[in-house]
Length: 72
Image (tube, rainbow, N blue to C red; front, top):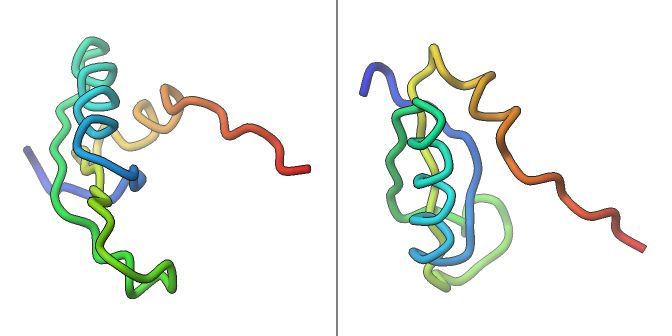
């Protein structure tokens, strides 16, 4: 993968696998690693994973991310 960059974080390895499968099905190279969520103030390890994509595919990957439901 050329210059991996942060795309998003997910709460488990299973979610990371599903999201990377979606990205790969659309021709986007993807990887994941343990996320350092403590830096973001979320705290704890909890199995969070950081999703990485190639910098040149970042915009295309963002377009494929599921929409975040509105918070009431």
